[in-house]
Length: 142
Length: 159
Image (cartoon, rainbow over all chains, first blue to last red; front, side):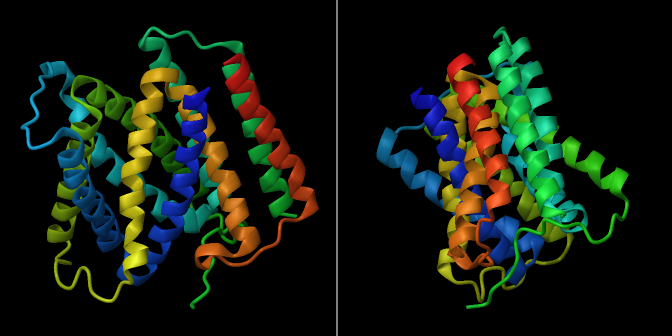
């Protein structure tokens, strides 16, 4: 239950960052805006690490097939570029609906590969959210 | 303060609709891959180390693109500090996602995050916060929000 709340909070966080980054992109352009975004994030993570973990060097090991897990940041950058490119062309709600379908379908596959089962509740809930999004598009386009 | 529209709901030109729609789908797939990768990284190292690696990877990629495009001059000039804070908030988004993915799975995390995002954008539009164009919530949008809230509740309770 607490993690469900945290996931909702993460979405609220995303909404606020999108508003701030849209303003940043309008002033500095797409590419500089995205750079500033990651630069600010990076500047926060170092002191955060030092406060939590102290002055110790991190050690961890990953196996060779797992090397792709280091690329999450680069994938995030790619996603921002694509989204900012297509949103003015086809509209934020269409983008959100298609993003949602892609995310949930792939997420469900990932969960299955990770060994978790996909419950009927998750699927029905996702379809209800999708229905709400489609309804919102209908109202907006009227 | 300059008012601008972030949320372009209507779609004036359906230019390359098929191409842009496939790009949007691809982007969604990449988000799920990214969230999974970040979650695995947080598990393999620690939450705090993974945040550094993720942002370092993004910063390097963004820096390389700037160098290729020869846009390396005056990167930080003329921007109010407040609007740079999006990146700082992004750190906590990734931290929350990593926490959730390893506990409730990718589907539930992404589904609930989307509902939180839509509701927060709706509230910001209604009150005109953060420079977003003021746009009062119309009554015919309420069923859409109710549907999404019910969907989120179903996911939480029976997920």
